Length: 190
Ligand code: GRF
Image (tube, rainbow, N blue to C red; front, side, top):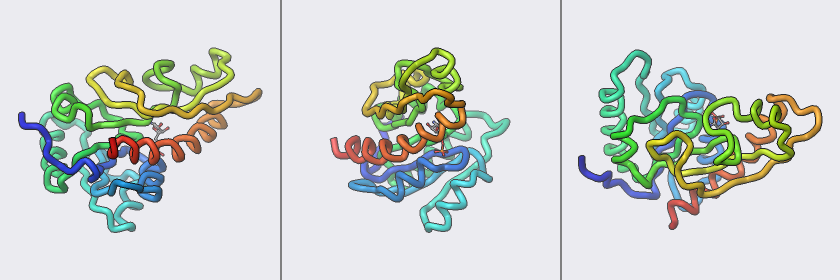
């Protein structure tokens, strides 16, 4: 398969839900442009917000779909919009090894833990249960192995006595909104 030929500064943000990180990336854009918001969930609230802002959107329900077909359609949209960088932001679908290889070095993600700690789900619960004094978030390159690519930036957040999963999540999410746009700006500029 040919290498993607888009412009690195033209970013597609992939979401599956509320899209608060996507909003932060749009609102704090610096050195990049969010040229597409794409989703595997047609009813994702973040999509409606992007449409209101007149940002091009693409969506196709991935449920029950053949991954190759779905990713082929996404790829076409990425090419149509000359996308060079993909930012995953609460995108709850694992990309195929083929897609990931095709976009190697051009896909970033935000993960709500201090990687390499707590790859996968339930990060806040696991950090609290482990008695960690600190948690945080990481922006990393996406590779074939889940949450394992090069870490580009991290922010630490204290875990306070009495924290629940929800209170810790809210505190980490605030840090995500600060970290992700800055890390993305650095990434497209490097
Ligand atoms: C964030 O916690 C992010 O770290 C994780 O999924 C959540 C997405 O939230 N990957 P939002 O859709 O950006 O509000």
